[in-house]
Structure formats: structure tokens, C-alpha cells
Length: 309
Image (tube, rainbow, N blue to C red; front, side, top):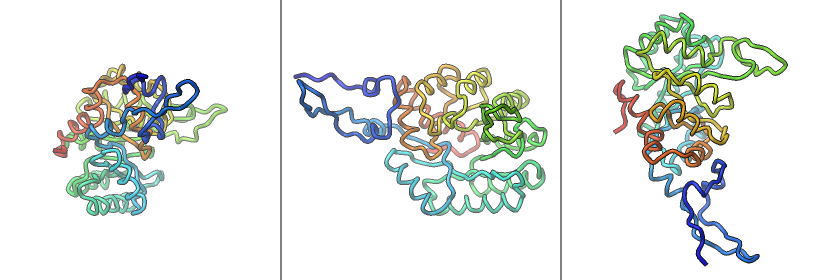
């Protein structure tokens, strides 16, 4: 009996590939009440075809956590992880962010061919933050990993954005789009700080600085990804990464529709199988997948002299 040919699209009909799906080597076909083994679509072989850069690798920088992440990366063919631990405390004093950036640099030195470090800072401390940019770039770090101390369109960020623009370095910052963000309060409260940047805040900064490059963190992080993509549609200097554990159907195709094939970065935020699976369950072409997994992020890195050969 001839079995139906299994392709990337019909392997996952109307749903994202799960962790189990990524690890399947065989499948079973029910024929007249009995299960018969058939050759399965070799998804892991397909996954291995694409070069990958993880544009959003978060770590606590412990040896155990780094080894775990690199193990996942090895299995999924991720060449380099761009990693950091952003300062989530509002104070984030200069001493604190320098010490954390030193920990990132230490991890980079331990795994020089796999980890690319990103630095954190707090624009409340203008002089120290500008000095820290120079220091970290000299150490080989490739960009920022910023949090919610100050909104991205706050004037305190202007000198930071200007310096990063001069260096042609991507400004990666966390943002949110859900109830409870930016001081808005209802019965549901996301417990986010009023200083959290929203998509509109990113648009304001990107309009003021069209020469700057912004990365809005993880559209798969649980927020309103449709709002994010629609808001950024006409702002070509805002990029998004696809990281996060949220695997809602059509997320990647929706992002492609509104942002185009050149503004999407592959990222995991430590959700490795989910982040690869949602790409493979999309309708992206081979060329678009190649751009998303590797080409787009590498193109931005090259502008600042950090491209991967």
C-alpha cells in the first residue's frame, strides 16, 4: 500500500511542531485497524540544513546553564548564541552593570567560538553608561540587552541611541504589549513597571533616530504579537526576534506579512525546540527561512563589524 508522501507542510497540519514532533524519527499509519510503520519526514535533517544564529539567548551565566544551552544549540545546529543577562532591578547602578558585563565577558572567553556577549546599562547614569559602551565594545561585545529602567523614547536614552548609531550597533531592548503595561491598570494587571517600553515607544524612538537599529525582544514572549507587528510595519529600522515559548499558530506568517522577510531574527529565549518548531510550521519559503535563521541578523552584525563568516 502506498502511503501519502510526507512534506514539511502536511507533517504539521494547522498547528506548530511540538517538542515531540521535532524529535520524531518514525511515524505509524493505521491500516485496517493495525499500525504499520512508515518512513517519517526527517525533520531534524531539515533543521540541520540551515545555519542559525540565536539573536536572543538569555542565561544566568552559570556553568550548568551555559552547558545546557550549548547542548540544545548543538542538537539544533545553532552556531552562535548572543547572550546576556539584563539588569532587571530599577537601580542597576554602574557598579552592578559593570560587574554583570564582566560576567558576560568571562563566559565569552570560556566559549569563544559559541557565545557572543551583549552588555547592559542604565541610562540614568549617562556618563558611566557611555563609558561602558566603549569598554564593552572593546571587549568584543556586539550590542545591548536592556530592560525597563527607562522607556526607550525617554530623553535619557538619546545619547545612548546616538552613540550606538555611530557605532552601527543594534539596540536590543525588552518591550511589552499587553494590559498592565506602561502604567495602564484594569482588573487584570501584568505587574509591569510604568517605565516599560511599548511598541508605540519604539516607534517614537525609531522615528526620531531613523539611522538607529532597534530590536524588539521576543514576539513569542506572551504579549500581543499582532499589535507589535502591525505597529512596526512602516518602520524599517525596527526588527523583531521570534523567540519565546509562545507557539500560537500563524505568528511567523503574520510577522512576515507585516514586516517582510528582512526584519525577522531567529531567537529562542531558552525555548529551543519551540522556537525552531514554530519556524518549520510556518509557510516561509526556503529563502525566507535562510534569511530568518541566519542572514538577517548577520547582515545587521556586519554593519558594526561583528559579522559571522
